[in-house]
Length: 174
Image (tube, rainbow, N blue to C red; front, side, top):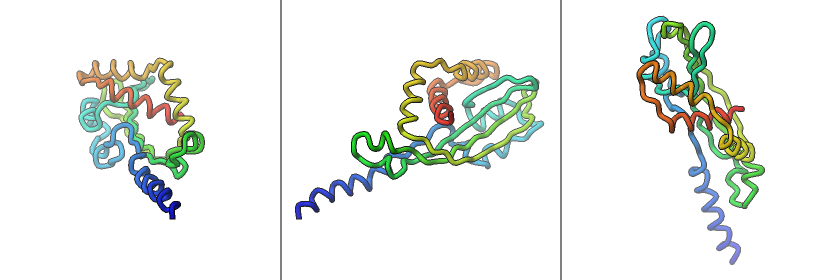
C-alpha cells in the first residue's frame, strides 16, 4: 500500500519530464524547404538570403566567394536522460535529434551561386555537452567576429545572442 504512494509521484514526474527536456538551437527556418527554396541561384543576393533566413551561424571567405552556414537542431532527451537520479542522466543520458543545415555560397559580387541543404540524425551525450559548454567559456570564437563583420558589410543588424546560440550548436556537432 505504501509503495503506491512512493511510485505514483515518481511515475508522474517521469511522465512530465520528457516534455520539458526538448531543446532547439538555431534558426527554425532552416528546417523549412519552402523558406530557403525560394532563394534562386544567380538572382538572389546576400540581403535576400538574410531577409529569408536571418543571420548565418558562420561566414567563411573562400577563393571563389563567401559561404554562409545556417543550422537548426531539434533534440529530446533519450530515456536515460530523463532518469531523475543525480548523476545518472549526466553520465548515461543524452539527446537524440535532427540537425538541419543550409549552405549558401555567394560569388565575389554577392550573388547567390548555389545553395544546398542537409538533414541528419545526431546523438549528443550530456557529459560531452557539459564539457563543450565549459570549453566554450574559455575558447575564443572567431565565427562570431566573421558573422558580425559580414553583417556590417551588407548593412544588416548583428544579433550577439543568436551568435552565442549558433556557437553552442556548432560545438555540439564536433
